[in-house]
Amino acid sequence: MTASRTIQQQIDDLRDMPVSRLRARYAEVFGEPTSSGNRQWLYRRVAWRIQALAEGDLSERARRRAAELARDVDVRVRPPGEREGNEPRVGARLVTVTGRIASAGADRLPAPGSVLRRTFKGVEHEVTVLPHGFEHEGKTYRSLSAVATVITGSHWNGFLFFGLTKKGSA
Image (cartoon, rainbow, N blue to C red; front, side, top):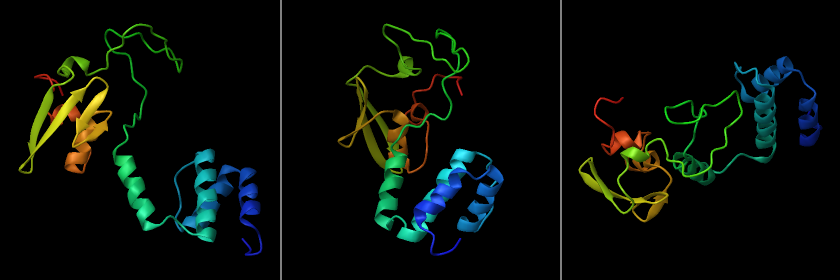
């Protein structure tokens, strides 16, 4: 690409490119090929990279903060499947259910107000079960896995980490 072309012109050109050309453009701006054939992902990544190269990338402080936020987020990679006692999913359509819905692990959780204790690397950690989450060191988390991740620095299944799995279950 010529230096005289504006960032917006380069991004506008990406909109009409076929996937093969987007993959080639990806290799140009990132310096390595991609195995992705997802048009939208390629478009977004290449557009972002063009802007980052022209206007500057995220600061190191912003990168660290983004990494902190990403560790605290509960991410569901796949939609919930059919489980005993739940309405089945039909295709991509979600079934609407009225009334009280228990989470998948509700039967493993103690009542709200209970305190879970776990010693990790010589330090005892306490987590209070809330009606809608968990409190650890003054912060509220949506899942036990998020708390376990903060404590260990790596992803853990929260029920496993705090010893709340039923005997014989994986």
